[in-house]
Amino acid sequence: MGQYDWLFYKFPKVETRSGGMLPPVEAYFRGASCIPGSQIYAPYRAYMKAGVIDPEPHFHRDEEYLAFVGHDLRDAFESFDAVIEIYMGENIDDMEKIVIDKPAMIRIPQFFWHGPIEIKKLGRPLFFQPVLFNGRYYAIRRRHDKNGREYYDTVCEGITPCRLDNSKLCGFCGKCLYGQE
Image (cartoon, rainbow, N blue to C red; front, side):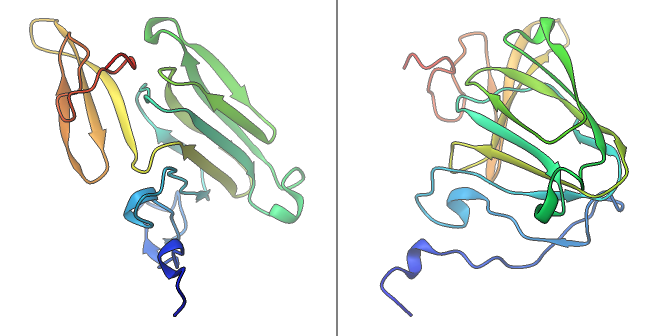
């Protein structure tokens, strides 16, 4: 054991339950839950068959990057055999559909809506890595109550979901979602 052991994370095998969309066992780096104090959340996924990665539009207060490459990293270009659709935009009601058919890295700015993300065609395994500049994964999604009133709720890994009202303040942490504390 060395003095810097607290800066290392040894990947345990994590079982997946995806109906064959993912391998049966994978390794993930889930930010601060793996290395306390981490300010990045960077899991990776190896998709084995087509399907939905994320079914709903959402945004984050932090910047995110989405990498799509062929799973054989010796040649991420030749091993790429997929068609992915992602919707994104500054406004949830005016998002653009983007079709990815070659390796790509997508920058998702703060507060930028994105999703759904779907693998429409997959001929060979696909390496997908979302990198969120926060030590914990969370997604802020728009909802409507039974009276049609708009609100937002947040799903945050390891924390009970919070509900956001029209004041745009997070019900869990009390911070303004638009960066104006």
